[in-house]
Image 1 (cartoon, one colour):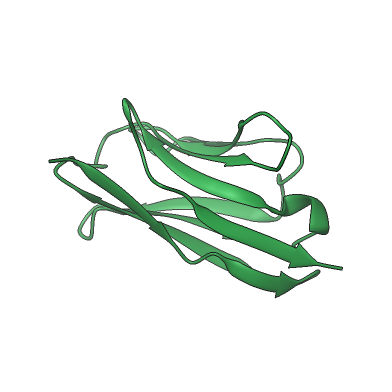
Image 2 (tube, rainbow, N blue to C red; image 1 turned 60 degrees about the vertical axis):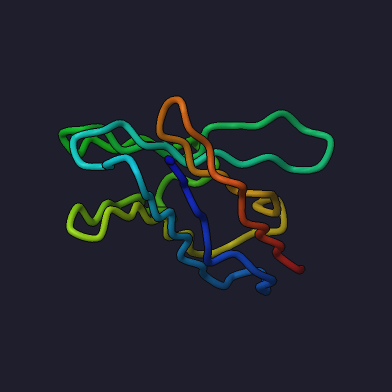
Length: 111
């Protein structure tokens, strides 16, 4: 059974940092395209960052320069580090490795 489990969310003040983790069981992240999405209340789910099989990374403009997506193949975990958090980063963050989704982790940034 495949599971993607996100963790690391929480309540943080604006300007703070968080590192989100996505741990996988039953499926490997190595050499795979893995992405982080987020969905804020009343808004559509949006792609935040992705890492390709060869390690190529991409970011949505709103987090570019203050976020890093990375992968630990030995642990089968993908991370999303977000610095200089803003209230508009508040959302549920989801890990996606097609066709699977995690359950999400809530990030709340207070002003």
